[in-house]
Image (cartoon, rainbow, N blue to C red; front, top):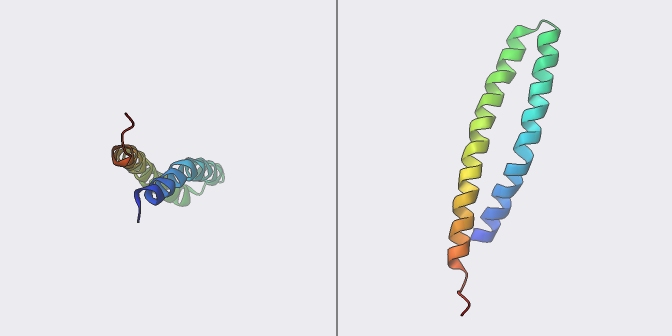
Length: 76
């Protein structure tokens, strides 16, 4: 994969994962209001894992952008 493709992939993850987190939080709150504590707990644990994935993706995007900027030829 080229660095440009990796940046596009990471950028799409950075933009989509917060929407997924918001949706999971909403559904977990709904399940908690319906007194389904077990399912709400599972969704809370899942959203914690996705939050960690989002942080790792943001760091990876910063590193990929740094590598891509170093690959570009310098203008003089």
